[in-house]
Image 1 (tube, rainbow, N blue to C red):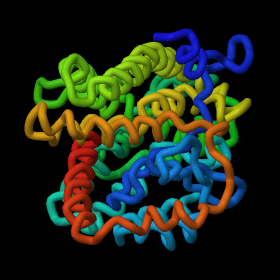
Image 2 (cartoon, rainbow, N blue to C red):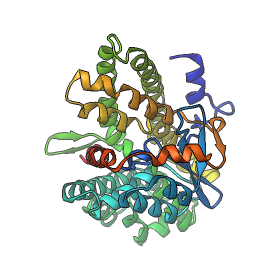
Image 3 (cartoon, one colour):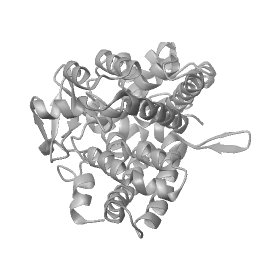
Length: 386
């Protein structure tokens, strides 16, 4: 891993601070080919969508959704995902996060806009995510209860029964009568405590399988992060083969280097996430001082790997090495989108020639790619389901 790439992911803004994620925006799992690699971020009360220069040149354009939809003709699925993101509650600690995007995209898939199979997988992913959130929430409240004045035991059996109930979600703990008493004993007001636990549970749920393991039927269930890392390590080995032969050798080597940098950083970032979860009281104290600091370790790990699941799954879908070699150029574009940063994005209107380039995709080429991208969405949802 180069020194520059290490700094971009791991260097704290100040001594002792948690690693900061680059302002690259969040990958949106759209299905329209014209929206490949599009990322979004919140700016004030609105969302901005970052589109790679359609001419293939350097830089990106920052557009509103209305401009994006006019230029690119998104699918109904894409329009609904964008609408859910626009209407998503804005957390004080995080204007937009990868887990917020996944929640919106899961909900659209669960409503059937990607077909019946994807809807079933999305509903399972929703249930599994809620279960992971409950485990993180219980972990936080158990630690708080043990340290609260006059509290020598975890929350009551009623609380644990609610946390274990299938489909109850992390929010099920916030109406229990014990919360008011626990908050007061621990020096919290009930409302901030419930908000802190909810936000931390949502941010860290994807990593709960690794850091708060759950055994079911004699088998330890893994989390999304673990499954994604296994997939990316497989991609790394596969790319090494393609990077040694033509065609696409140079592009494959660049793609491999970018992925290797991400995986090197991810190991360090996952350790940081684990360290924060291992000290739940400190994590809650961090949230009380600055909610963004408490969520930042999880957000930085998410940003490091964000968008790479689609690259890996697209590679996995290819039937043979020859087809994978032909995919290298497309994957390089997606990887470039994943490396967007604020300096590479200039808020501007698309020039006429760029807009025309976006419109030149003929429908007969769009439909097979849309179908392929819907298959990719199904596979992405399976990464979220146990």
